[in-house]
Length: 433
Ligand code: IMP
Image (cartoon, rainbow, N blue to C red; front, top):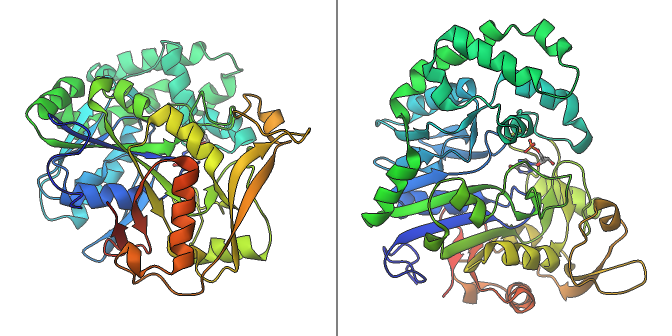
């Protein structure tokens, strides 16, 4: 199968592909989006989250961390769009742009929504103070989205105003936050915050536009448009393990509302998941295990947060969250990442059901996080494989136990696994029909 062919399977007229996280984030979306961004996409779009996302890429021997910028920024000629559903820290964004400009030898093509909300230093300080209980990434994401919901947020279009007017708006926003905010005002004068934002704005101003209009035009003109989801289904603000979630909707529907592109176009949707499960931050994690094997997996796969450096918690593959994610996202296929990490493990588990305290199989994931802590996983135990699979180029080359693992997951979740990653390089990828 030529997955990079111009026409996608599920939609004959338009070439829109979305890639979303199917677990708790950090599934390796970066590798999948990078593959499509470099070989297929003409436009790459971010439509949710902010600099809480992050993946590291190597280009011309230089390592770059992409946090707010779409993956297409590293490919010449590709248009990159940051939509209104994202929250933007202009100061960080300018730093990121400057770093990228140093390592690529072409003019970057970037478009930033005039409706995106601005993360300010106040949001970051508030996040540091109040995000600890769920271990947020500390980037002010939740606070910025809260300002937005409160209808008091500062938006990119506000940065056209004078420094004094921006400072006034910042004071108004802060006065609406229902916590004692005096501490923050003592530390940060609104005019100082406004001055720094205005400086950053001068760098990003040429990129600002109405990105919904732009994207709809690209799509109707037949461009290959890749939507790059940030975070993942199980961090969804409504259907993740609330309150241990992010503040946006990291689902396919979230990409639609976050971009101003109608749901109609989102027919081709890849869910990305690891061959085992990880999560950072607090919250229930039904298939988590803590022993020598989890330490081994963490070190082998370097399971530490790209943005925060925090060690990731390790668990077994979880079909229950895959089914929940599929209900939200409607995956047309799955990309199964880091299969090579499981080589050398005697027996491998797959969680197929959640069992409650009375021993009953749950039909759905409970809304209350306290209930989730009481759940036990029901596992299928499969034989592992000893062979190094990192050089396998096709499905048929995999050991029979690895094939069995992949096919068992497919049977359980009833979604085809069309991409299997067996190592970090682009070449270490198996494509299946
Ligand atoms: P926030 O998005 O920084 O507000 O953090 C809320 C929750 O989402 C925390 O548990 C974070 O660890 C988690 N989170 C946010 N972004 C990511 C990500 O890109 N990967 C994994 N976890 C994330």
